[in-house]
Image (cartoon, rainbow, N blue to C red):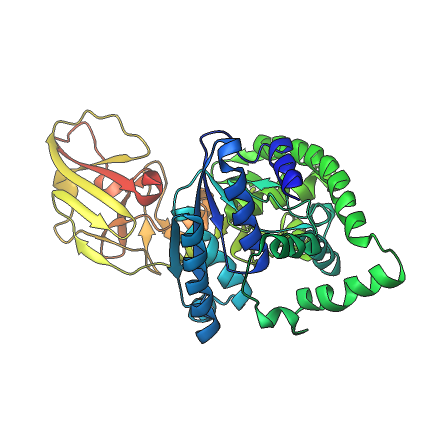
Amino acid sequence: MLDRVEQTIKENGLIMPDDRVLCAISGGADSVVLLHCLHSLRQKLGFTLYAAHFNHCMRPVASDEDEQFVLQFCGTLGVECYFGRADVYGFAKEKGYTPEQAGRILRYEFLENLGFDKIAVAHHMDDQAESIMLHITRGSGTAGLCGMRYMRGNIIRPLLDVRRNEIEAYAYTAGLSYCTDATNFLEDGTRNKLRLSVIPQITEKINPSFTESLCSMANIVRKDEDYMCDIAMRELEAAKKDDGFLRENIASLPEPIRRRALRIAMQRAGAYADIELRHVELVEHLLFGRTGAVIFLPHIVAFNSYEKICFSSREKYAKITTVDEYCMPFSPGLIKTPYGVMKVEKIHGNKFVSDKFTAYMDADKVPPDSVIRSRKSGDMLHPVGSTGRKKLKDFFIDKKVERHKRNLPLICSGSNVLCIVGMAVSKQVMVSESTTAMIKITFKSEEQDE
């Protein structure tokens, strides 16, 4: 088995010489054997090895016992181990995740933050078969049929060509002890039911090599999927505009490419897991929806903004669509607003060159009661070049200002909007030939910083 693990590492380029490899170890048979294998191969392949254990605190006594076992095992091997823990149930309740989703998010966040070249996890061939079957039950497309990859980013899976019984046999032969999670033997979840009942039934009554057949199929499908995804990624880049993608461009793509392009866009926004075919179909329908239409998906939000479809994390979407009410004096100096920093200065003369971050007003025409504030219902603006005043909302609509970009700080006198930096200056305070002094306003938004 050790030779096969070495072959998997070499054929898939999982570990390079001088890599700093972190092995995630739970204390179970799979991760114990993985750490032992990597420890045996470290000098031959020229990498340095470390370990990490994350305590999910989901089994009060057993979780701590697992942690102590890992500490002793790593000490026996002479492998430095990092430890982390978190309240998974509390995090799941706070964010609306299942405990399994919350545990995965916190675990990988802990591992990634340690900063190693590669992170080795102990998924094996039986895990692969379970994952593929799980995707099938959820109506997955070919992306789900590909199963887990040998490498995703810096996550590597050296045991993906090894069966569970081989791992247990290796542990027995090497005299390795390990922890057993009793919850793995309870049919109280979809994955456990597949592992304990469905797959064994198919193996016994239909195909003795069912697990190997599923994994072989995944390898074949993966090559086709990669080719199609390359095309989809090029089309997605061609459709990119500012912070979104042109809806017409995406909608006109052939269905297989369109759906892959949408999946890629969702993944980039933070939906790395739990996206199913039904979610992709919902986003397809959104392509033809009205501007402002929004769909809440696992971990992310998809929304239309005029000709674009945009994707955002739920946290960021809540921030950009919620108006924080504020009001502060308009005076020279640096003024920090909830959406960025405004620099106000008085300069002499009437010559200027404006841009999308800078605006100018006639200093003598600016009312003394002027303030910097958030937008309100009833705000009016008389843009330069316009025949009269119009509602601020109508101005945004006429200019096709996206809803999530309407929170720029306003300079106002009462309900009169005097200036929106980079968008408009009111005729009331416009600079003219008779202007002798100007107010220069420069605004740097949080979005620019990002």
